Figure: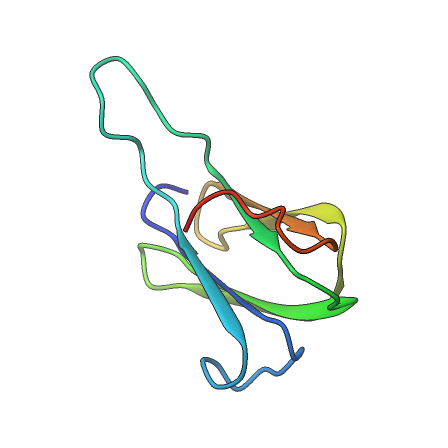
Length: 97
């Protein structure tokens, strides 16, 4: 969902934000007649499992722990819409902040 904030804790720790935490923001884009992909992609290095927190614009939160790396996870906003998170195992696979 546009406006969502996605945090991934590489230590699989649900006490956000301490530890090694990566953050992505989902936005709609900044050019005329264009839109950014609404997928948050993370490079996880050697982490095999992570904890994911998604803060949706309506204030709802979704927290999942023990999420395996190297997959695409669909996290649904409890109130509406969708958000997607791509998790990659290998270092250097992240696309921008």
